[in-house]
Amino acid sequence: MEATALIGAIPPPPPAGDEPDDDSAAKAEQRPRRGEQVVRLRPEQTGEGYKSVYSELTRPSIGSRIRTGIRTTGEVLITFGLVVLLFAAYEVWGKSTIVNAHQDDLTQELAQQWGDPDPTVGPTPTATPSPDKPVRGKPIAGLYIPKLDKHWVVVEGVTQKDIRYAPGHYPQSALPGQIGNFSVAGHRNRATFWRLDELDDGDPIVVESKTTWYVYQVSQTRIVKPSQVEVVAAVPGKPGVKAKDAMLTLTTCNPKFDNYQRLIVHAKLVRTEPKTPGAPKPVELGG
Image: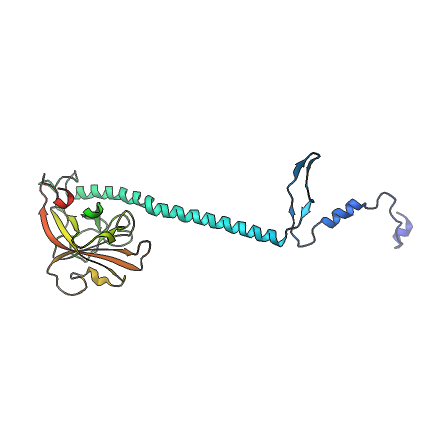
């Protein structure tokens, strides 16, 4: 090193050939400034090979940012819409398949409980007597609505767990055929009480117990608030009044796909038929 460099003298200019050329200066100017985002253009093939048709770096504009935001929002909405459609398909078809499978299991369980290996045949003389008090979550009766071509096994209890796959009996209400109000709750899905609003006065509803068929007729259909629990009283609408008649009440959510109301169907017992081996079902069920 020269002595002049050690004492702070101005160093000599660089030799010829070391000065930056114009291309280097242009490239330096194209570099992004601090805090500025850039996107690299995708090279395109030309007769001279792959190269960018514009420049090596292109700075995003306000318009490109808006288009990117709109595109991202659209993709998110499309994805959300697909998720909603899949959930709706599950509610309509998937859940019905699951409920029907559990109903088949409950039918077999009820037949065994009644001591009848074949659910299409009445109980045998050696049938094991059913318990006096129903067990929570266990099947207790069959419920038929001929107009809707529907049949369910009713379980004991009305909690979410109890009625997940079957209509449920209100524990404090009467049992099938008894004086009072045999009250049953069910979800408003396609596998359960979806079409309950189609019932009219006079339509039959049949309940099956271990030894008897009970035929009810719809007497009233109405919509109430969820807080109006008096609809399942022994005398509907009159809590504390002693019942003189045997009734049936079905409850479910209203309207469809919501639950801020309750759809109520009341029916009165009009006829009973004993179940005997080989005897036909009630005429309402095609017997």
